[in-house]
Image (cartoon, rainbow over all chains, first blue to last red; front, side, top):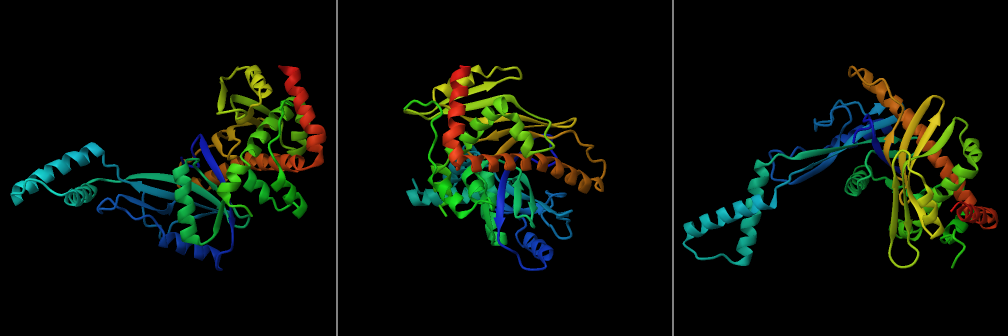
Length: 206
Length: 176
């Protein structure tokens, strides 16, 4: 869901750590190094990487603008090939029959069947186009704040993994306790009290 | 510092308590919210509220939705020990309106609509459109962060047990 959409979902993060100066060049180089790879002509079933916000379907980010005022704006793209299990089964059965005829054998072992299925999957992957899923993000580097435009668990996990691999910075999802814990204005004693809280009972009944 | 997964589960009640307190504050002490955000004209409960009751065995979920839905069932659920787990909120500032869902467990924002923007006619407009949208998102996100910070300070203070909890209990028992 794009950040310019009429209705959006946002997951908030805090980014801890510093990048090498000059920061803008470092970020541009990292985005290029970890940009998404097109897998339409490849046997890979999934690819995950960065793209530019303005041209998310172009995997080459060279020359793209990622800087909008004080904000970094770019996108996470996850390309996935979806091969329905029935298609895989159909082609595996056809291939198995063909090879049995060619070899004159009556059956294959379990391991041979597994290898054959993998070969069929590989062949189908080469003929299948990947579906791209695009999630925008806004990063205020100076304030260490990042907004990711999805609440989907799988998309957030992809972001956390790729961000950590790419930037080597700590990305902290701001769920309630983390948001409270990372509030810089809390004193040590207030933080201790936060760690000791237990659920309140508003009914007054035990 | 606790491991994130452990902290998420151990303190998952914190966000639901926040939303329950926010409902009480909206109904009884809305001036507090205006003190936190001077630009706020009004904050209202929108067209959806979800409550969860984890007392006893199992989990009971109560969903109230609809533009004119009454919240009486929500109050009955609170009396039985439920907490608000998700809430649709309408934030007004001047002539502008924002609407969004806030989830207690994660503080995630969804179905987030900002006031209308001009849109983009050309690629040159994109930077302006992005910055305008960021400004509009930031308005509500900063508000939510400030109200949550206020809640946390109250929640860990002695005032919470001495004043706030009894006041919320009285509100729950009086209104249902």
